[in-house]
Image (cartoon, rainbow, N blue to C red; front, side):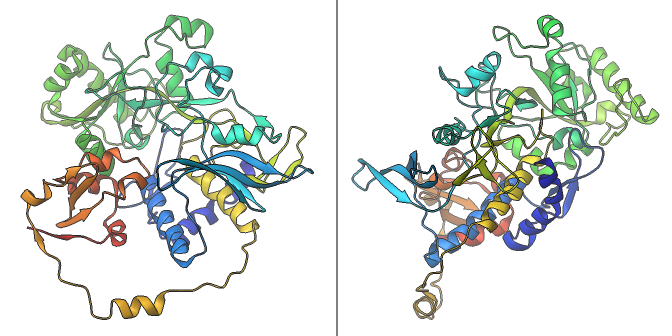
Length: 491
């Protein structure tokens, strides 16, 4: 499977660029990488850009009648024939009257792409079964990450692989306004790749920040005596926290991420080393000693942990340096285990035989990444195995009734001039059921879109009745707005 991932990586990147229209023109180095090897957009965050552009492509097929998207619909069972072949799904869908109704949708092929199980801490969950010591650890995965697709697969005899291999990412942000929330926002690995350093509560660095996720996490956990002895986390212990610190030049190398984290209150801009020490609640002399040693290591080209790549090193006069700092903690981030698949994305049963009609792609499948996934390979996995499965499944020919001529006639008179809208009027539309947001000088009604937002409705609703340009720019490219019709011009 890893050979399939690697051998198809170039074509996957080209597919995203040429077919989906994602800008991946920037190369970046992440933790565990010896060179710059991760493709990123010049504007916006890579995950958001990929999802929005794929979403746009899928919706174009929906408009043509080739795809039906069923919202508020949950798959409850797989349907199979007597010979074991999967031939459809049973779903529960919310009707217009608000009541649930059960439907059966028949199809010659079913693809599971439901993600992992890192957010399910309920009794009997996969996390409790395979890694009970991690049950109290926060996670970056959304609330959807409960292993539903894995359960569906095993209900028809699918095999499982590597279920005990759950990745703990070393840097999830601790929100100072909600520090105990089990859901964390990832402090992207790029933050360390551009030069961010990690400092413990004693004011010391303790690792090569560019090491693999497993290595950095191990160094973090090794602050605990029980872990040093057993190499296993004690579920009753407090999860450790650390400071992630970037210089101004390092922050410039990850500007989109930094702006995004600043807007969310996860990063703090700090002027001078003295204020940094105060923020860390440490003596100035200790923080000065640590940062100056890092500067000397950078000049020597190597530190005591074997770090040889030094980007974004603080300037010589630390009192004039601008720092960006936040608190991070280890978080559950990815499940290497899942349904057993072959190189063509077919789901295999416990005897390694293909289950006809059932396929899987992404985190719901297992066995692709070994003991611990390398940064950047999750989006790659989704693209590689998603396209492999997609290309193998035949598309039934259809007689499409396209609306092109009708659309031309409807809009031949040209678009009506948009009204001017003041902030006072925008502020009146500030609820979940009536959500207007100003972006780049235009006013958008995002009420219906909020629930479709891939990152969840909260980040949209939080901006209701406000100018969200700054928050938008930190995550997205401006081209995403092409799919939205503004309701007016902001004046």
